[in-house]
Length: 216
Image 1 (cartoon, one colour):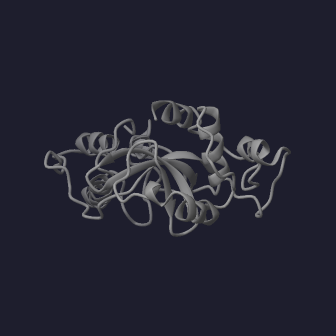
Image 2 (cartoon, helix red, strand yellow):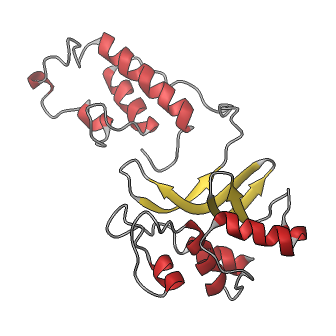
Image 3 (spheres, one colour):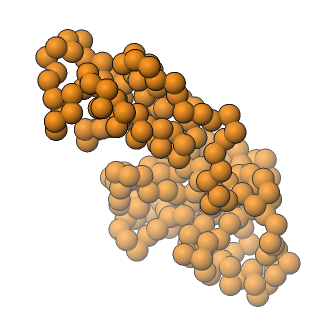
């Protein structure tokens, strides 16, 4: 199934145009014309397209997740498995589908449509977690003894926002002229108390995100 996965991976980052329209090339391929609107979700159209492009056309053409599952139950029940493998089609109970990219123990990673915080939908790698939230054994709170240490720690955590936007927080905490910054809701940016409150938030975020690489 390497060809299926390679085809799916090349589509990562594909988005609708315009946003939230369901207007994507997978639907155009499936329906033979451009379509848009709530009546045209495209997760199954994407799966059908990927397998067709990889030369492995699915035996039943449908844009419905439940319809594909019903067909396999009636015609090829042996294909419905409990132990997924890379390249398998994963069907969720909430009428959604994707392609399994990897499996490690009980953790399944799939390539599927995902809704971003901004409301757009795009092809993404989605990881099913074990819900244990076990921290990495190498993870430890940063040592902060000065303002410079705090800024380094915030940058290492990949913390953004702290004001409404996605701007890197370590830059916000390090203005060119610190004397021009007096207070922020009663907390002195140059004071120890503000540093502690920001640092605690940064540590919690880091434990949750697991120090995601590439965010510094």
